Length: 251
Ligand SMILES: Cc1cc2nc3c(=O)[nH]c(=O)nc-3n(C[C@H](O)[C@H](O)[C@H](O)COP(=O)(O)O)c2cc1C
Ligand code: SF4
Ligand code: SF4
View 1: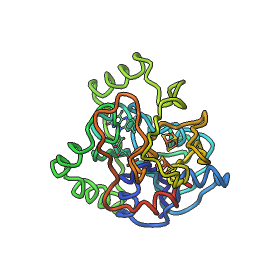
View 2: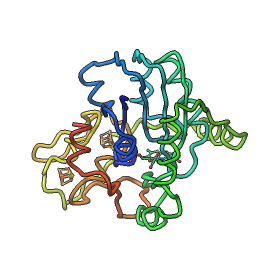
View 3: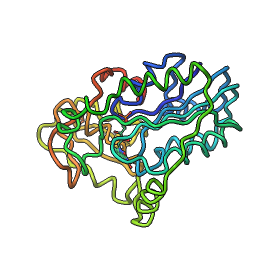
View 4: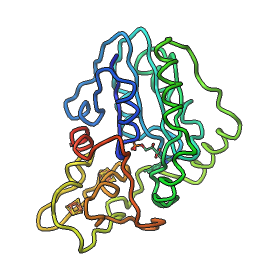
């Protein structure tokens, strides 16, 4: 089994690790222009951004040629996934010709302008994440065929995001990050960025192709990066994933 994953703060990588197999990071596959993957089972695990897959995942799957007997896609999310599973089915079908299993897993929400990370961490036990992963693991092991039915409510969330013109990549994203004087120029933010959007010299510079993943913000060891409108100073990284693992995945 091969799992392709995208993870800014570790939720998706933690799911991938628990499902097992050959784990391939989508930012690395993009960098190495590796679009043809073949295995008996191929899965994709990614976060939900604005009720859809991250832009980089969408673009990767639009170009990819996945060859497998059984394919699956897991959307992790924190609050409302909207029609993310519908979109996932479509992307997987385009890449592999068939989508056999799609599921969503609710985890800590990393959207700093909507939630306080500490509250997300404190209320995590209520989400029963390990039980959800176990269900998905058993389903995949049994090669279950299942695509969730998206409800009218889910479609409304999707519609609201699009009607409000919500974009994962705001035009002023390059200016959306504020680095304060706690920065020690360690370079972690540049290493963890999946789109190579940060340069660290005698200062930290954000370029113009931010994916809006907030990986740099959550993983700065000095908590020196802030975003406009963030609800609190607290930050999150999935406890089952080390900083070095995320750097390896995204660098
Ligand atoms: C920019 C951004 C947008 C997000 N949008 C949504 C959303 O529309 N619905 C939702 O339920 N969660 C949303 N989330 C939460 C993430 O999907 C969730 O926390 C995910 O598990 C993070 O995965 P990772 O830790 O592997 O990066 C968003 C997070 C970010 C950073
Ligand atoms: S990770 Fe934080 S401390 Fe390190 S260079 Fe980036 S902003 Fe500065
Ligand atoms: S600059 Fe930060 S938010 Fe933008 S893609 Fe890189 S790590 Fe993600």
